[in-house]
Length: 376
Image 1 (cartoon, rainbow, N blue to C red):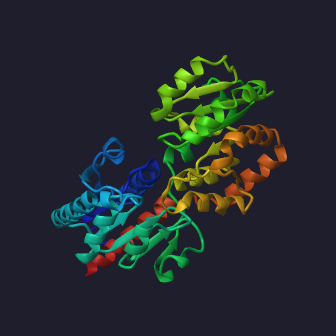
Image 2 (cartoon, helix red, strand yellow):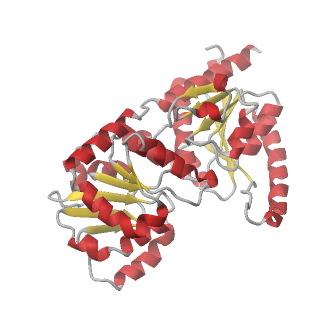
Image 3 (cartoon, rainbow, N blue to C red):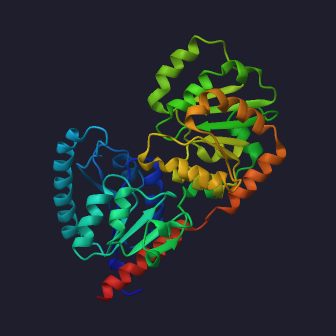
């Protein structure tokens, strides 16, 4: 590509790890292909990306954008003011930085940034992580040049000629980790004689998952040959510590507020219990992990249920509704982790749905758009 040294790309979005990890993976892939590429992130003030992106070595500017309150419409007046302000700021950022492409990964900030870029004649690329497209991305897709998706059949939301099936980028460290199960079990301080169930509620934790464990401590304690690793989320950590202090010790339950070494945790796990966020699902597929998916009901358009069903209908995961988790999750996990045939078939089918090179494929699409823009 001509002028490789002068490629400038804005990557916008965030809010949760599920938006931020893919964004950073795409940026890293671009840097590997074009070492001199200039990449600027645009996020939302006060959200997780404002820490995570600089930690990954990239510059980020925050917009004052906030989410709409769908229940109480009067609360949206300040939201609209923030949105207008964010659009004006995004316009100035684009004018100053002069990107050749703007990439949106979902989350509050991507709306105003992509809208302004498109209105200024700059090609935009949307990375839609879910099997069900949200309102913002449907609106942005009208002016987007390319839409990178993780599931088939997304032409029911987007113009078919713009869609590229790429999968979701996963954290590179998970793919590169060459840990054996034995090493991972040792590293995690677990018992090699027992099967391991890993329960993760996402980076912020999940109340339902936590209640499912805490309400079934006696069943866990009695479970022969099984041990649990339970990530509570930092948000719930203190409350759970105080509740556990009033209970008898459960020797086969390892409790942590945050698993920093996910590569070891995944490698040690025979079964993973997880929410059905897009990036968690992509990781489970790439790693061929058997899982029970408990979709969060508190997300826009209930997209996690649709993500989970995309796997469970193909025998690539077990589906459990949030409302049934407290009574059924622990017994189901204990029964599943003891069933060799079921574990093998879930893992194999998950692997069939994996995309292994998503970040590079998306980065190539970004470079194609930059090249077209340069020629103009």
